[in-house]
Length: 479
Image 1 (cartoon, rainbow, N blue to C red):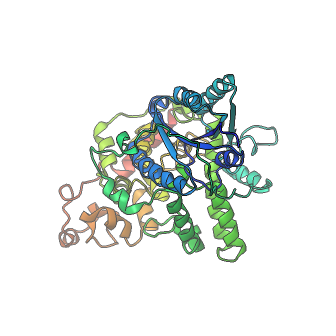
Image 2 (image 1 turned 180 degrees about the horizontal axis):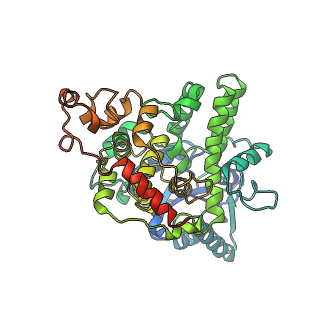
Image 3 (image 1 turned 45 degrees about the vertical axis):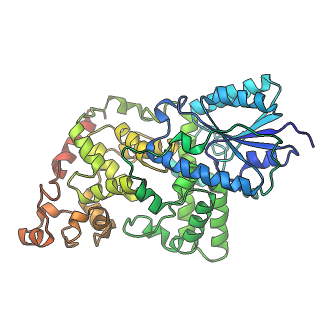
């Protein structure tokens, strides 16, 4: 066996199962060196946020242990990837470097630059699809261009052959001889300390490939059977909660797809419920297609007329939204769930997003930036697509004039008020009839619940009807 090793450069693919780059290296008959580079410089505004850094710390620890079970070792280095990766390849006298692809324009450009540098060093530089069911250029319109509406994208994806079955986990790696210098994970100090809100994260999540597989197994064992309805109910455990595991590549979409189809074929998951879940996996694919084909997707609206939208600036309102102090219980519950757990139910993401953009007329980038810092599943494609959808300015977006009423949304999707009571405990004794509109509750009801509007719980920071009129008037200016 040749002793010139292959380097597998890990990014958002911290797993041994269905990892094409790792599998190709393991099959090559050479020692394998596993490398992770923490690059806080190159991503600029899109360097990891606080919640994602907490997750990454735990995920790297779990992945390092998993690699050791297979005879490998995770080497940690810090710095600009375009400098670190070629230098590390020279240090190791490597035969090549393998990695799984990125799809944002800046990431693709950097990977191309690194690949050219490695080839000039006469190294084998290869990239693989380890993040998507299909490459973005595989699901295209009849004219060969990208889709801008989800439904035809979903139909085209379902007509396509595949996706390919997931690759088996790599269970044996040959490490190169000799010691290799590595940073110490704890020295990176990834988890935020000011403030340290990680207690709720520890209680909610188990980062790592094992945690991801357990989460999928639990979902397919029960919640998928009522997914179509329960996915919209934040008061129920009706979603898969796989998004952070997907974001860090602890599980692949092909694995999720294959396991879900298997459950459907075995009769363990009703066809309609399973299809709905698969379509949500496809929304992630659609978001990555938008990211791949649109250079400024995270920063600029796809519908260019929104560049002239008359957004407001109001720090007091923005801070009230961030802190869950808007006076609208379903909005405040969502924002507090986000802060406590690093995650928010998808239905509530739409509600709080609509409130920020339409009730408060604050730029969708404000929401995108806040989510980027506080979500454990903060993903460049999904985050941008979600906020542009909410803002009415993206592909297949909700029309701007569709303005969610937070009271009716609460009544419909949290009818007993259980979700609000969980995250807004000052309203825990409010009866369900009034919990989503406590300012209109009769005085005896408020007194019995121990609620004083404006003191124990804030009064609404804007009037819903007036805010709706203002939003529609602003939209008229760009129509």
